[in-house]
Length: 276
Image 1 (cartoon, one colour):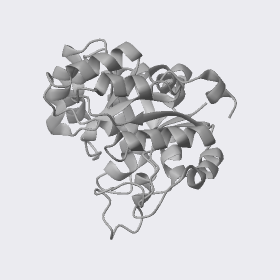
Image 2 (spheres, one colour; image 1 turned 45 degrees about the horizontal axis):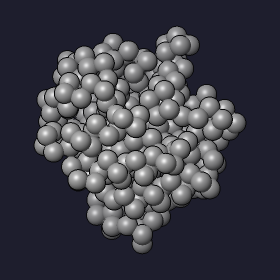
Image 3 (cartoon, rainbow, N blue to C red; image 1 turned 120 degrees about the vertical axis):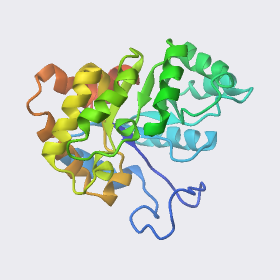
Image 4 (cartoon, helix red, strand yellow; image 1 turned 60 degrees about the vertical axis):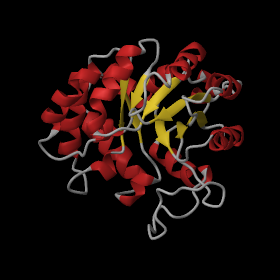
């Protein structure tokens, strides 16, 4: 069983994806679920989580529409301005859709300003992905410690570059986050985060082992970061590399990384996951 906990789709004419440069031949085009589903099936991936690529509630609603027409899309992590006065009402409205699972935000925010929004997330059982980098660790720790009812998901190895031999330094830096029991980590974005490219299985294995040591396999989840990952390799490359990098782990640890953690954190419907 495999759940890809980090996918993106976009339509350039629908939203302003300012972060996608027009001269980026790989990313500057539309991507739809039909573009990925054949590769998912070929790789043995049964379900996916769609994550925001544009800071708007409208995009969150559009992604929910995608799940209505694509049953393998098990959940949506959208965007809501948690500091807005109407954030609790907006979250409550989005949560009426059973596949709205959480939001993604940068951690560098005024914690007091987003307190009501975070409380509403916790009340609704929604998670909070963090799009962060190494400079955000202290802020993310403060966020997790001050809101113990919330579950925070660190995307893409918490934004670090995956260089050979750098995993131990990463583990030490990430340990304060791992010490927060309400924080989980996405083993995602590794194809593009590799320095140098292409990523070698030995490097990824060392980083996965460091993540298991810090967080435990029960707080790790796989994510492809498709189509961003296409800048560094095929969808199948990411799956194959992680299979090789986790092959030495026990069955329970592998089950957590590939599906169990995502199923628990995003509260995926068993009917959606099992029927694919």
